[in-house]
Image (cartoon, rainbow, N blue to C red; front, side):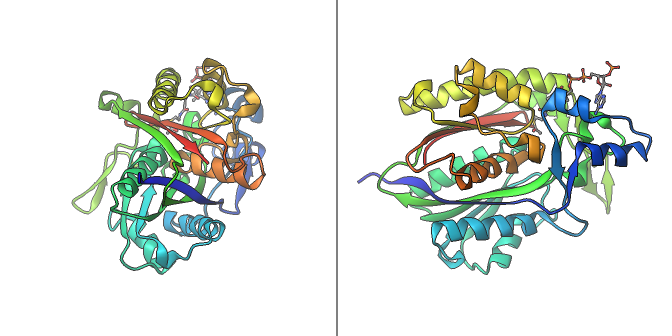
Amino acid sequence: MSRFSRITGTGSYLPPRRLTNADLTTELAAKGVETSDEWIIERTGIRARHFADPGVCVSDLALQACQRALEAAGRDAGEIDLIIVATSTPDMVFPSAACILQSKLGNVGAAAFDAQAVCSGFIYALTLADSLIKTGTATKALVIGAEVFSRILDFSDRTTCVLFGDGAGAVVLEASDVPGILATDIHADGQYSSILCVPGHVSGGQVTGSPMLTMDGQAVFKLAVGVLEDTARAVLEKAGKTQADIDWLIPHQANIRIMQNTAKKLKLAPEKMIVTVDQHGNTSAASIPLALDVAVRSGKVQKGDTLLLEGVGGGFTWGAVLVDY
Ligand code: ACO
């Protein structure tokens, strides 16, 4: 009998501090940085984002998301034998956020590590977990995307600081006789590493280079639009499916214009796309599992629906996962 993996529960968490564009605009104006609600909505579709309070770490956000996902799956943390956290903003250099989360969950013995593929991180992590379950290495996984991007934003740079937010999303992925994950497709092209990066690193007791996010927005935009179409088509082909089989498109929530462009290229009606970028901003690796959980809990995504999850981000990285939910 073939062995597959299937999502059995979803969960998410947003830190309580919510800033609308108006709130952020006021805070930035006090620092002499000029922006506006109109500019942010028109160029990105973002209306609000959540920021974690000082001292709250990625593992704290991930813990809340995992507890909700475990409850939805009817599982106890002790049953989990694999924990993968997709993040670019871990609690510390090491150990991994996954190990710190594991301890907070009260789990002992599961394999635990972080996956670093920036905004494609959750797609990479889900692909890894699917493979580890299919090969019999794991049976019940927690796959998490969690970020505190507010910690790496330069609030004097209006071209980036209005775009991102903090949050976490998680799924429980379990071995199954019937396929949940139908196909996966992941890629990278490191020659574009400088268009979206946080170049700083720890060396000799100091941070060398800038520890803040920098981005060439237009270069990212152009690349993102092309690779998102490619990976969507590739994952459908691998699964022997077509666009007509997709019930819901759940893309990385970076910018509404990139997302709408992808839906249009795939000839999907706009109402078949899950949109949370307006309320969450770009939460990097957390955005896809956050959007999935919102869609599940709102009743939009139903058991048996076919979901196309796809991400793109720093690296440059991109990929897609086709799921029978
Ligand atoms: N408020 C007001 N004006 C601004 C702001 C702001 N926050 N930011 C930039 N501007 C100004 C610029 O200075 C520029 O002014 P100028 O014409 O006088 O020089 C003008 O707005 C236009 O700037 P552009 O950079 O050309 O604006 P664009 O339409 O390209 O939008 C944006 C910028 C939103 C960043 C867009 O390029 C984009 O979405 N790129 C993709 C970014 C992305 O998705 N990143 C994440 C993907 S990967 C990941 O998630 C990590």
